[in-house]
Image 1 (cartoon, rainbow, N blue to C red):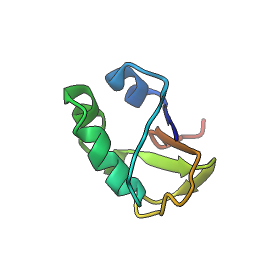
Image 2 (cartoon, helix red, strand yellow):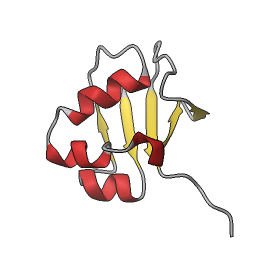
Image 3 (cartoon, helix red, strand yellow):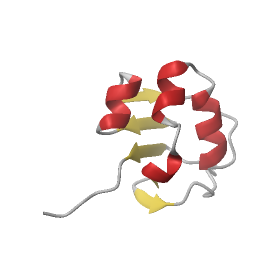
Length: 81
């Protein structure tokens, strides 16, 4: 699946996106797999309460299933202005 990173998540990881092979059943499981990739990922996903997630371009929770997901995006909360 494609995993997209936006704003400070992208800055910490050092990539805007990557193709990830995963056995994760939920977004939370995917986050755990990503954290295990190294310090940059661990830092980016240290506090998931500061992140939002979208699966196949639909906002969802970290408990959401990844059944046949093609894209997962991580980004900080959006603010208006």
